[in-house]
Every structure is written in structure tokens, then in C-alpha cells.
Image (cartoon, rainbow, N blue to C red; front, side):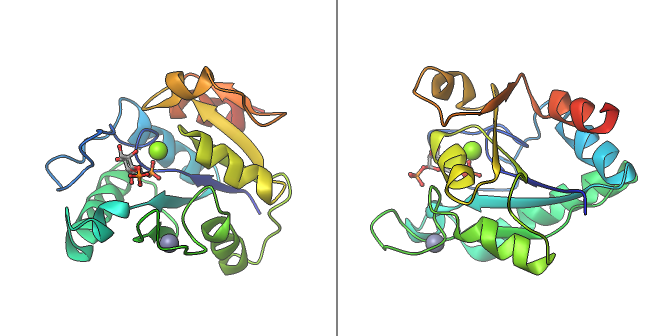
Length: 177
Ligand SMILES: O=P(O)(O)OC[C@@H](O)[C@H]1O[C@@H](OP(=O)(O)O)[C@@H](O)[C@@H](O)[C@@H]1O
Ligand SMILES: [Mg+2]
Ligand SMILES: [Zn+2]
């Protein structure tokens, strides 16, 4: 199965140190919607694993988060594609949950949902925690330079991390090779 897992903030949409607190603040990065649609039309299932501690912090609620994801699905559908399973961690850093990246819980949930192995599965993120989550389950860490990616690139990365400019470049690599 051609399954690709994406981080959300900083990969699909612009991120903010003030969190993405509303649909209005959820703004796709250039080429990201098209990339997801092209991957989908090329037979890829595109799932999402996103930390959303803003829920625990009280910055926005589940309904608002779901509205952001409905917007994403609409935009991708308008380009003829579709978005697969979206999994989020609503917990705060101190809650000790199993789903907050760098823990791999969300990756495991997605792989189990699609009944597909995690080994070698590409997980695309902009933060070190994304890459560490991938490494923890022998998936392929993929860093994009959007969002916090350029800052992350300056840190020691998991061995074997692949680096691309943005999601469009990741899509081109997967579709054309
Ligand atoms: O990149 P993904 O996982 O899709 O989502 C990241 C967001 O949940 C937020 O994660 C926060 O980290 P803390 O949760 O406060 O450590 C900060 O980095 C925010 O800037 C960011 O918007
Ligand atoms: Mg991110
Ligand atoms: Zn969690």
C-alpha cells in the first residue's frame, strides 16, 4: 500500500508560535494542497499525524480543529484528491500520553488503521519530534524546510533523515520515482 503520513503545521499549512487557533489562521503553504491531491490521484493514501496541544492549553476546541480539517479536505477534493485518516494528539506536554510526538503512537494508530507496516513508511515533518517519532518505529524520517524545518535542519538529525524543500518536492519524488 502506498501510504504517506504527514505532520500538519509547518508541512501542509503555515505554522505559528502562537498556535493555529482558528480556520482563518489555518492557511495552506504554497503547493501543499496540490501536492496532496496529486499524490492521492497517483494512488497514494495521505494520512496526517499532528500534535495539537493548543486543545489542552484552551486556545481552541475540538470543533474548531475539526473545522480546520474539513477545510483541508474540501480544498484537496476541489483538486480531485482526498485526505485519509487524520489523527491528532490533544494533550499537553506534561500529560504523559502515548500519542504526542516524538512518541510514535499516532503513527502506530495510522499504520494499524490501514493494516500496513510502519517499517520504511515515509513520515514528513518540520520538527525534530516528527523525525524522532518516525525513527522510533523504523519509519523513514523526512524533513521539509517549511515551517520550523530550516531551524530543525540545524539540529542533529536522526540518521538517514531525507531532506526536501517542501511538500511539493516530496510529492514529486514519490510520484516520479
Ligand atoms: O506540527 P504539528 O504537530 O502538526 O503541530 C504543532 C502545533 O501543535 C504547535 O505545536 C507547539 O508545540 P508544543 O505542543 O507547545 O510543544 C508549537 O510548536 C506551535 O508553534 C505549533 O503550532
Ligand atoms: Mg509541524
Ligand atoms: Zn496525546
